[in-house]
Length: 110
Image 1: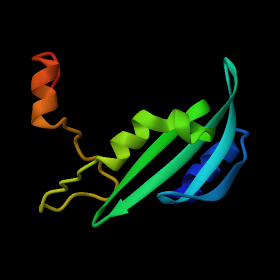
Image 2 (image 1 turned 90 degrees about the vertical axis):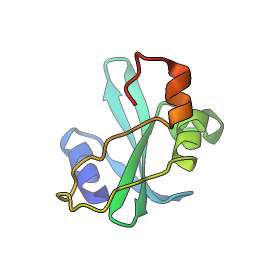
Image 3 (image 1 turned 45 degrees about the horizontal axis):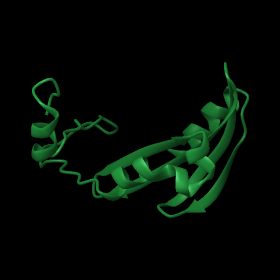
């Protein structure tokens, strides 16, 4: 998947470099946005029959201290893929833990 992301960035005029990060190999890139140049950091976490991709943007892509919320989310993530067969790359539904969903109220789908 890293190579596909790298190729997509290249096609959009951005170069990506591979680096070793806390979750394994990462891609780092700087892309042009309407607001100017923005840093991106793509991380992947592999599990049994699943993969999670996270994208840090802006200061969080270059400063670990600014990456707090996404890092906490990735570190606390629990994946229950289920036992049924699914097509390759089919996204799995995201659900908040019951206690968090209850605190959020009825407007959040759990």
